[in-house]
Length: 203
Image 1 (tube, rainbow, N blue to C red):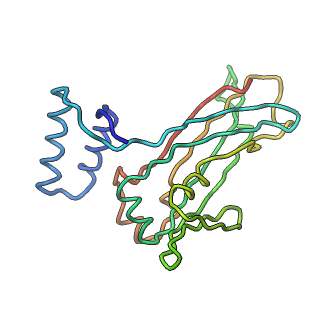
Image 2 (tube, rainbow, N blue to C red):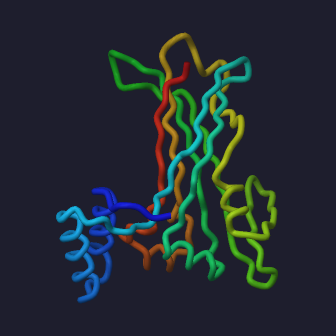
């Protein structure tokens, strides 16, 4: 998927240039991208991950979240996955109670973690969640499995009172769980920063 470069795309590109290895090619590429954007010329760029479904339900069970993320991997992340590097994706939801007299109070917090790794011998992708593993024949099937949730309980009924509450949701690639040598190697590289957020009131 391609489109016209936006300011955020340019900032990510320049961040990769600033924190990455300085080469003649990277310098020229950054200057060319800047010149094209300032001139209003469309520049092809990779699509970013985005939240395509987000539904909150409050009932007798508590607060339930259904979500779906259109997960797009950068070339560097996709290359690492194809080389059997295990990747970890995290969905995190925090429920806050609005307070006028002090900072908002976090009343509930829920986290989910997935591990995905490519298995060259069987040409399949293994996804591990809550200690259980399942193999998928294609990368798209595996990514779909780790980027969606249905009726995920993020708060108990007793944690929600009659006040105003809202949810802060974050879905990201957690680079802190990668093998230590790789963490050092990708430090500061913008194409390893995969994250989407959403804040929404509980009705």
